Amino acid sequence: MQQAFEPKIVAFLCNWCTYTAADLAGSSRLSYPQNVKIIRVMCSGMVDPMYVLKAFMEGADGVFIGGCWPGDCHYINGNLKARRRMAMVQELLDRFGIEPDRFWLRWVAASDGVMFQRYAREMTENLTRLGPSPIKKDWARRRSLLATINGGLKDADEAPQADAVAAL
Image (cartoon, rainbow, N blue to C red; front, side, top):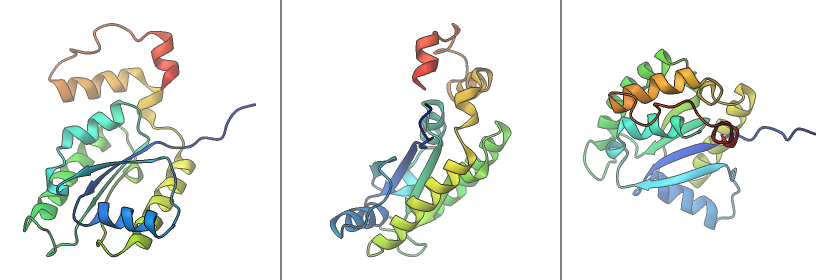
């Protein structure tokens, strides 16, 4: 019997707002899906586009970036920098056939644990409907994305072992 698909979500959260909201959700006993793996960053503007691409390469079905509301950034304009960068990342993901619903950039205030919970649930529901990331299924597409990340196929010169592919 086949298990139900549970998407893997990597969430890069701003320390000052969205991470604090996620912490508030947890301490308020607001449940959100356990498949959301949180990585705390000091600012959403510090999320390098390569981190997003690498997350998809490593098997994420979706990537969530959470930052402070515009005008509330502790680093003045880091969230605006994130918005500009992530627009570019979205164009790159489109080129590789990764649906826009797999990559979210959202603003969440530190006091809004309920909003973080809602976004985590909505993204999980959307990704469950979409199914596994196309990058997981298509090794040629992964190699092409890896070439973009590395500037060449440094890590993928050989065909993948059956066990490595099955693990994804």
